[in-house]
Amino acid sequence: MKKTLLNLLAVIIVLTMGACGNQDQTEQKQAPEKQVSQSAEQKDKTVSIQIKNEKKLVTEKDIKIKEDEILMDLLKDNFSVKEEKGFITSIEGIHPKKGEENKYGWVYYVNGKMPNVGAADYKLKAGDEVRFEYQKYK
Image (tube, rainbow, N blue to C red; front, side, top):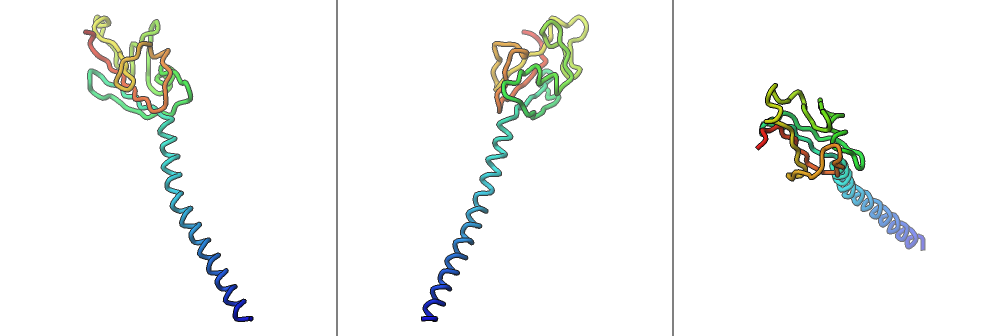
């Protein structure tokens, strides 16, 4: 009888230890997935902004955004920007030379397309890729 109880107790201990061991392995397997998910969430809350001078990259930043953040506000908070009457006249010191104000200017694209609104009215979405280009008007 004692032998049977000891065997039964040994089996219970082995099963309990085995279950705990599997639980640790399960948690270890799930941990990287949680890290990947958190990393993806952080990326989802950012936008990428490029500043180009006639196709040449001047600077690029990945910037965290708030919900419904306005592009112009984010631009002014992260770059040196000047504007007149709602138009961007200079970014990072790049502006038309005297007498060329009507020949060059700033345009912007979001995810490869030119929006139908100005930067002061554009609401950013997580993951947007924004490109400001200083270029000659056609």
